[in-house]
Amino acid sequence: MYDYDVVVIGTGPGGEGAAMQAVKEGKNVCVVEKHKLIGGGCTHWGTIPSKALRHSIFRMTEFNSSSFTKDLGMSLNIGFPEMRRSAEAVIAKQVDMRQGFYNRNRVTLLHGHARFVDANTIEVCEEHGGCQLVTAASFVIATGSAPFQPPGVDFNHPRVYDSDTILKMNHTPTSVTIYGAGVIGCEYASMFRNLGCKVNLVNSRDKLLEFLDDEIIDALSYHLRERGVLIRHREVFERVETREDGAILHLQSGKMLKTDCLLWAAGRQGNTSEMGLETIDLTPNKRGQIEVNEDFQTKHPHIYAVGDVIGPPSLASAAYVQGRYAASHMIDGHADKAMIRDIPSGIYTSPEISSLGQTERDLTAACIPYEVGHSMFKSIARAQITGQTVGMLKLLFHRDTLEILGIHCFGANATEIIHIGQAIMSQQGTANSLKYFMNTTFNYPTMAEAYRVAALNGYNRLF
Image (cartoon, rainbow, N blue to C red; front, side, top):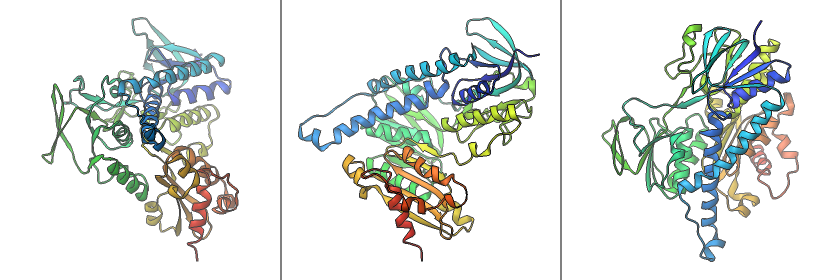
């Protein structure tokens, strides 16, 4: 009756997760990708290139700050354009690997822009002409997002960037203003400061990354300021004045910030334009995001949407598991809710931040009796050996049952460290217990032993 059982629009993490899950369950799957290469924004403009860039900058900073290299009179001074080239090899490997997934599983891959004709038909048009109609019993929209560009800001000016175009910057600025202090803004503030740039980080809210635990927010703010980042809270954009030698950000408070360049990092919008959604009575919100239910279904039960195109949490890891969940629900009529519950955040500032579960703010508001266990990295032998002593691991647990309620980590490799706690926190009943960390032998010296230190620290507070 249809050409395919499932058509997935987009080959980012959400699309790949949905396509692989559906084909593994025996469905005939087609994937549509607008661009020449697969992988979506995650591979080409977002997660992979920015994290590869961050790693290169971190390595140079680590080299230059080492007492060993200082004693030898050695230092590195590599510019931004050279740093960003480090991502090219990683991107190529990622594309080859993911292309292999589709080839091995015999998933049909079509290149072109997809537009809905009716609820079971899309038209796929290639860049240089030529269109074909494709029908399917079910669809997954996984088209991702792009940086939000407000009207009145000239993003064609060579000194004004968003989080996509910043990766094409062909010079190393001496100063930068970042408007928007969300995850992307904070990550780039860390990177540019580590390159030696003067950084203005402009935040329209009262605090940085307000969804995090307050203690982690304070630690991040302190560390950025200590590194020399100038943070300006409660400031709202009025206009951008461009000049040949830079850009001036005018704020509603009357302040003016002139720097070599401006990075606009205030929000993203879903990639839903010209998809023909109006023909199937789907109306995205003002940020181009599609409304879905708890199972990622749109108002049409056979059409799902996952990933950045539906809004927060806007994580590649979340998008992938949402895609898998949507495909399972589509095929079986149900899926395991545990797949999409308690997804850890990963923020690649320097140092990293990762968080899972409830914050102290949440637990206090809910009147849950909890206690706190800390492990400061400056006291961990492995951190002392590597010289990465900034940060901490924080465990929140129920003071009666010892159930782990929240894990918050700030420091080197935080996005890796979080998963040890995640494995225990996901256990059912009494298996989720602080005692696991107290009674388990951890290799020494490792960063993992921070869990034992934090668990004992918290347990000793009980009476």
